[in-house]
Length: 305
Ligand SMILES: C[S@@+](CC[C@H](N)C(=O)[O-])C[C@H]1O[C@@H](n2cnc3c(N)ncnc32)[C@H](O)[C@@H]1O
Image (tube, rainbow, N blue to C red):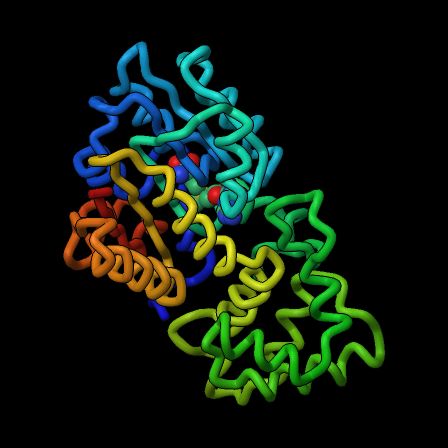
């Protein structure tokens, strides 16, 4: 697991993570169709559009409606040269079919959530801010963190904390949670944080990272089915890439990076992709210093053969 808190895993519009490497390796200047599968505030999309020719087009996808609206505003200088679509990138095939696109020259995935989402207490992503236990990236989705925390069995919660958070004390925390919710439902982020801390011995309440980091990460991954979407999204994207087209994925924790690494390697052994980055690229020291959010980033890029 990366040495960072949930707070440092996010990015801002003004400083999209590893954008220099993205520009260098995905070469938007010479592409006709670029798909940004994680539009966010439009940071990377803006950097690409600055370089893309007038006859090229960018498709921006996000499952968060509010982010799309903000990105639309941030990208207004490029009006007419981009199309924004609300959706899960797992369904990128449906989105591209609806737009009548058969081939794409660049796919970009910058995984996780944005600073904007994290910093809004109402979204429930942050253990540092009091808010409802929500964590849905797509506010139209049916299942929230509240539903999981208050309805799953101790066993199911243990599996989530262990599998998606690599949390050592998964069982203890799940036990404490199930006991606590017998008295009252767990409704807020701070309530959940208090329960997590109360399940740990004092020694483990003051580790390198905030004690709620892993449980919050695991719930977010489960609520948004992040790993399933990632597997599906990459596979579909590779199917649409034009020969010589490139796919770049920035991941922020080992579970994501493992999926990217193995999927790219499988495609390489099938002769479908060539690896442009043999090992993942990481941000330089100056970027890490300037932008805490970039500290755990890993970029992998591959090219369609
Ligand atoms: C880290 S932010 C991207 C920031 C963006 N690159 C920028 O420069 O502004 C990730 C974004 O991807 C979106 N997202 C995450 N998983 C998604 C998925 N499966 N489908 C669509 N959007 C997703 C989140 O809602 C969030 O807005």
